[in-house]
Image (tube, rainbow, N blue to C red; front, side, top):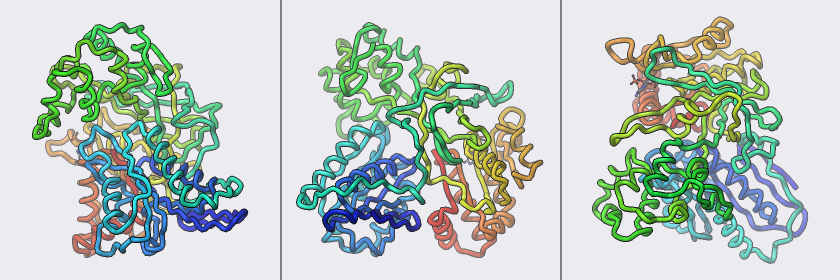
Length: 567
Ligand code: 2AM
């Protein structure tokens, strides 16, 4: 086998056996790494069947080679309100621009990842699917749209694609010896048996509240042992944790329906059973109302009023109803009396694992992983509501207990390979988590590059997360500069972007010096405003006009010098 690696694009060609003319390009657009993982899996399967596969991130794909591609398989997630993930933006734009070539010879298929609780479910996948057809491509297999529990549907799509391509080249199915997928340039892979589908039962070593007395918030610092798992991670990676629903919500739901907690119901698609209480606690999602769920609930009993809510023209009412409501509201507001527990769980989504940006460096804490999780709690519709995972961690998970975990590599949020490269890190609130990992790593490797952290939260006295770590790193020179914005200590709100604008000259100079920019935290408000501040800085200090400044930032993104981990 011959392996060519170039700038994140890899081509693995089988040279034993018959000459294989079937070339397949697999592209992924991935924010948290799921699409990339699936794209890799597909690529290995294709290679096992003797295909020659080019696997690449959409952002690394050379668009001028598109015309020559015969088979294109795209795995792409959707972000926010129907937007492409960062590393799919440029390819998405290219395809929808006048520069896009006609693709009559192309066969393609799209796997779309998304979340049915969002209105623009799988929008990016749908966009690609539609556009590739418009450009003349022929669908190899129909697009598959996956919900958060994507495993099964993704496997189905992969099998359909393999079958379709396999048929087309049945006479060439002399399988070359299994060819491993090289991973250089597109993230690391852990040598461990543990994964999303087989999580490691990790022991919680510490669970501390980082906020001071009298704070309005509660942010947990979790230290988790990875001993014996062989799990490794890099700064910027995420940890997936399997969580549990609130016992009170489970109880109230069971009571409202008059079920028995010990009744047996399926907890796995393979038919494995568990008690209803266990099922609703650890296996199914009961806090999110999605349209597909309501449609199925409407079919469980006729005349329960749900059909009316789902009727055409009432989209706005539906949107309002599902906001901050859960399954308990549903069974109380709509008559689902008489529905059996079995039928009920059959319409539920699996409780998906939650991903958190890791806040430790493995170099500083061997065999450990740290998380920084802010508890979400609010009142809505006359009842106290809790963030599923954050309230579990804050209120019901104690040191000494076990937590099922797995590492999710995040190829879109990585330290520069060169330790001399300057870093500008912007992470208010829990967005600061990965920067504790970045600086820990830089300390351990004795990096020389200068570093600058922008941090913000509401109050200095109670909300300065990891204050001692930053102070020590400042003293030791691991952290060169730190600017903070405490938004509610002054009469006028100050946010990280205001601090950035105050320092616009220096930031511009750091960028000239080759600094890499990292932004982590709230997407809609913070990351958006920080982006706007960067545009202003480039205009003000670099003499660019608005359009040029935007293009400049895009270029930085393309070069992986501007990376975001936003949620
Ligand atoms: P606020 O709650 O006082 O509005 C971490 O959550 C910090 O991010 C808080 O200080 C919060 O301020 C702040 N924040 C809220 N909206 C923001 C925005 N648009 N840009 C930057 N920071 C923001």
